[in-house]
Amino acid sequence: MSLKIFHLIFILVVIITAELFGARELWYYQATRGLATLWMGILSLAGGLGLSVYALFFVRKMDSSDIY
Image 1 (cartoon, rainbow, N blue to C red):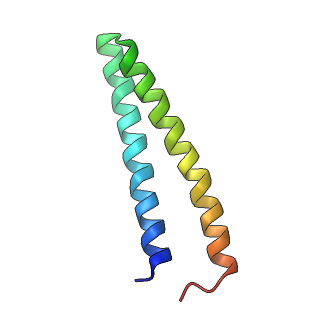
Image 2: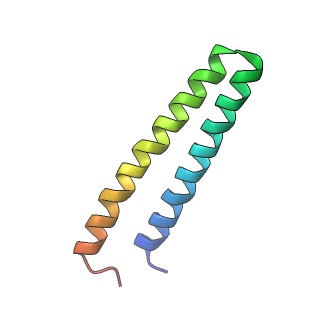
């Protein structure tokens, strides 16, 4: 497995983790109404979205170069 493929898999795992954590925090906010949980949920979802954009740019760069 090349370093580029490992990097892509790692980024995808981090995106999934960030989105699940953000969804959990927003779900937990409904029960507790804690402002910190709301902000952690919003920031986590925004971070996952930012990493998704980064992953798209990385895949485009990978397609234009030799991955093997």
